[in-house]
Length: 243
Length: 243
DNA sequence: CAGTGGTCTAGACCACCGG
DNA sequence: CGGTGGTCTAGACCACTGC
Image (cartoon, rainbow over all chains, first blue to last red; front, side, top):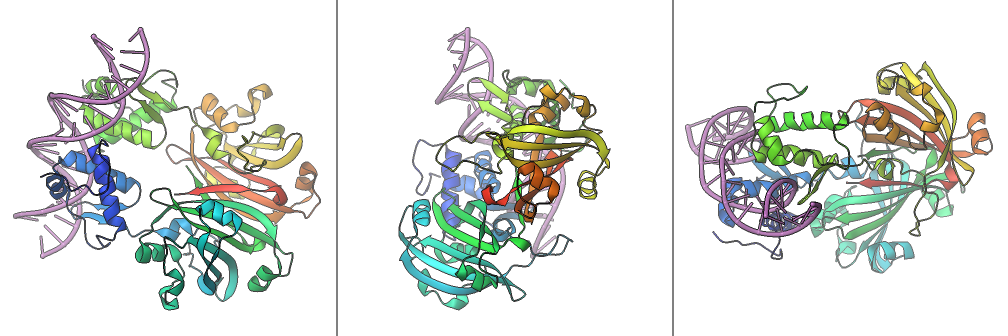
């Protein structure tokens, strides 16, 4: 009976308030990806709603890719497929059906620093943590990345043990800081390598580069990361699905 | 009563069969963007379903961007926003809030021809119509495109009056041939200009190029167009939204 | 005002999964 | 087998639109 709706404001439809409540619980790590969330019937009883309304809430979260239904079993938090979709640039092996592997990652810099202008504008703050890394495939450096994340959201990121940092950042954002990257905008341009980049990527100064500016957003459309990535144009391949 | 379901095969859920039936009618131009489709209640009666089930069908089509609900008024076919989303490459003016204009288009070739290997594979046929054109912005050529479309779907395209061909192809596909481009995959790489391209784009042979391979699909996920577009890398800018 | 979509209910039966 | 999600019904009342 009654309604333990969390943060959600009144006068919104019940199915939206429940959706937001569930989203908050998911982001808070209430459920793992292995255990189902409460069944539709249980949720209906708990929130004093009918099953149809609960279904509509869950439909929304499934549509957003946060939940996954498994008939006969339950509804589960979807292990975010981050880089299946979000790492898509740089397909290094041709599309012969072979899996594309995730580049390994070498950390160069990780520090609290003022944000460069563009990053500060995108993130709405100058107080950021800067991450610089080089990503490699089979020991060949392919991507030079500078990443900026708001210090307010990622307090303590600079001091995380280096072992805790895998090659993929978005899972860490989620698991360690509860920040779920849901959407991103990539801006792709063409440039040439300066000395620093050339050295890191084993190119010559002035060699052609693919340059990607990315701004990533969380569920609530708040910007949570800005990055610039550079790679040799010669091997570059970027795939984009347009709907 | 009973069910004038169109093409859809049996044993699928009713809401899917209705969705497909409606999609077919939309594609066939049954309704214009100014007149509403039949109300939910009417559809329910016509197909012998409950309103809830009809709503679920419509929900699907709204989610796909084919329909648009207007509370108190009706449900309308959504005027396809074709190139707002599908023409995104090459933003020529910086993002100072100014509208980006659609490049004008000069037709070079339009003929029935055998498809090059890549196009034939993507389209599943060799019998295609080939279109070559150069797109310009303020009289400056910026994009050289080769486009291949299946002759079976676009019978008579080669003989359309040139006046009927605006700068945007997807609206023509839809209005003249009932082919609605719903999704596309872009593959972006960098290359260098050969003589032909260099001449058309007023570049020097060997100048860096952005190269986009695109395969476009209709509502039923059938490939309906393959194209390769090339532009000077120096001015190139491609924006991609990742969800 | 009548007609539309928007929300919500309280059930039903089915298909599937797991123990 | 019981519990889960998947489909579907036949209503209710509300919010909005357009005449």
